[in-house]
Length: 188
Image (cartoon, rainbow, N blue to C red; front, side, top):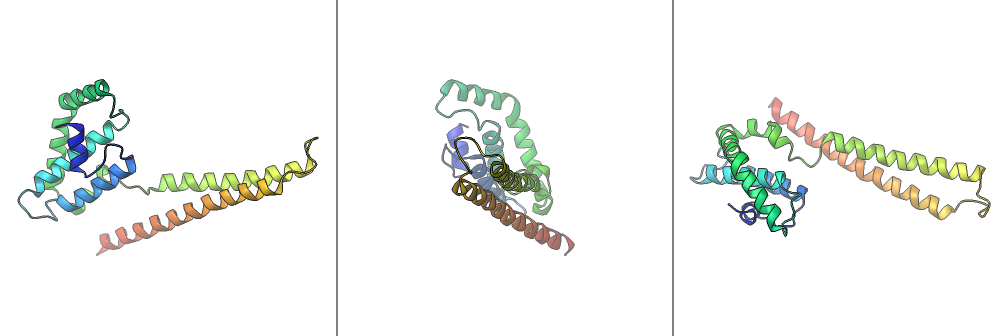
């Protein structure tokens, strides 16, 4: 199997980002998991999708146009990881889809995780706080060439901080909603 075939299995272009790879894998896993899809070739397609995902995640940083590096990555994959990947995918295919979704492997494909949301909230709050404190400091201690700091720059940085805060809050709300849905499904 070649790298281009792995991209084709997940319906991706060779310049796909990590988020696109994760999203494509989640879609294929849901589409082909034998617990959901009862067709004859679904299990094999699920195993291929899992194998493609593991390869693309493991070697995402290898440039596709560097033939020597990619050939080395493919050899490494064939020697060490492909058999383990297929065995793991076989085990996931035998498990129910609900159990598969609870595995650490599947959870790593989530784009929204609490750690990244909290980190983005901290960055947004830091930008806002440093903007206000920096502007206040420059008002008290102006530079010799400028009497007062630029209000436009202050407003611009404040708006950037507010934008990051708003986006982070939207992601936090989406994460909380999806967590509630998972808990509700779990309790039913």
